[in-house]
Length: 393
Image (tube, rainbow, N blue to C red; front, side):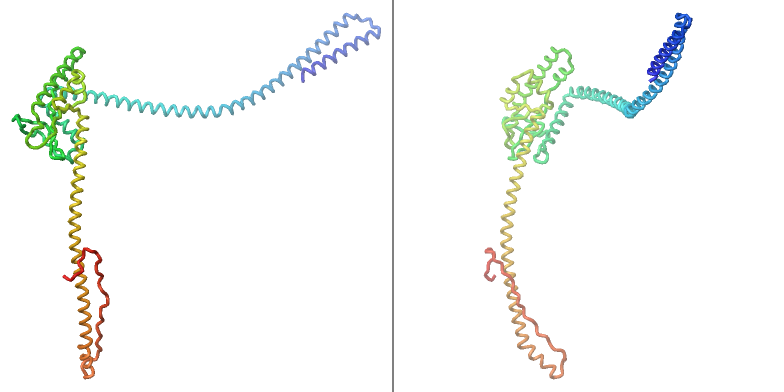
């Protein structure tokens, strides 16, 4: 707007200057035209400068006002846009603070857990070392194997369903003594011999060795020792003991899955040779499955025994119920006879006794009338069961 005013002013000044020059010429003035033009040019420059300065100042003020207004509006818009962002930043800051607190707590818990794990690992290492040293003793090794066997038997649920004796003694037909660790009794009266005396010295040496060649050598010795024990166990022939029938094999319990797996890896024919000699190599899992089968047999035997007892009880109950029904019939017939006898007595009292007694009031003896006794009309219901004898006993 101010620029337009400036242009209009300049045009007006130019028109005014032209009019003055024309007037001076028309008047025939001797004024020098060149000097006049210079004066007019100076005047125009002065006026134009003043007008430009005024227009520029006004334009600047208008521009500053407009810019201030626009800037305020944009600032308000920016503020409205930044308010949710600021709220989210506050929420994020609070969340980060909570995460930092939780991290510090978790860090403390992890450090505590790490310390506890280190302590447990140290205890486990110490216990493993102690167990390894203890297993090198034949007595301790035998006790540990028997304990493992006992745990498997209890886990299989054999305690409620079968009897087993630790360290029983027996004698086979050839006179050689036998002493298995456990003899599990079968539902048919037979027994199953289980032995848990497994040589483990070479295996423990293999676990302590670091060189692969030494490890393989010790495992080969472990397999050879296990084969020797299989041969010795087969020669005892526990299934021929003279105190009852038994399956024609003996179970050699190996108290660790790796003990048997490493021995079979070192001697692949060991398992088949043992079975041919009627020795069943059983790890804890295999023995557990075998004992579960025996426990199932005991359950079936108990169910069959209970069914037989129930049948016997049913037969006895049926016989006794016949006797009860017989006595019930006799009791009913006796009650009927008692009712008839009672009614006959009532008739006799009314027809013979009361006739005479009612004459006493006429003679001045007694004043109250005597009531006649009522007869019984209800009869007992006779049992209709064919087992009840209807004849009089």
